[in-house]
Length: 208
Image (cartoon, rainbow, N blue to C red):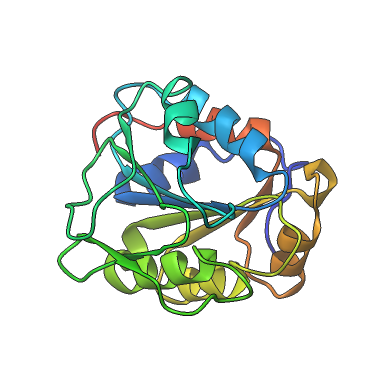
């Protein structure tokens, strides 16, 4: 069973273990997720070591001001990557509107205009599944507020390949369907409030 937000704060040893193993953090959200992403990125110190990749369900028509908005709240560089760009530690990579963002075997970014997955492009599942295939036990995936089940299959792949899955507590989500479905399908290792997610990430060691 996943641990809930009511678990006493005795998970520091597990956090340290996850942090040492983690090379990439992938984050997916939809309706209500933007507020949580703002909170998470604002909490990350400039010394945060893993790479970060974010998929938000957004209207497909550019321009997107998401990167500009997030950069003001984050101590890490925030970019909208080009295809073939290296996934860099300590950098936040945000999926461009209208494109799936994937992880290639050589740890570069791939962008795709293939059909929408779970009615979405970019798709959270596409990012999570491709990242799990490459990073395996060195991956942490966070699924946030959202109104459909995109990301649930991806979380299951993350866990199957040795990664760790955090899911937002549905009681704290503006749209609870996405995190609730993940929990119901057994795709969560931990269930956290946004504040707990932010605090745990911010406390991770700078050097992995």
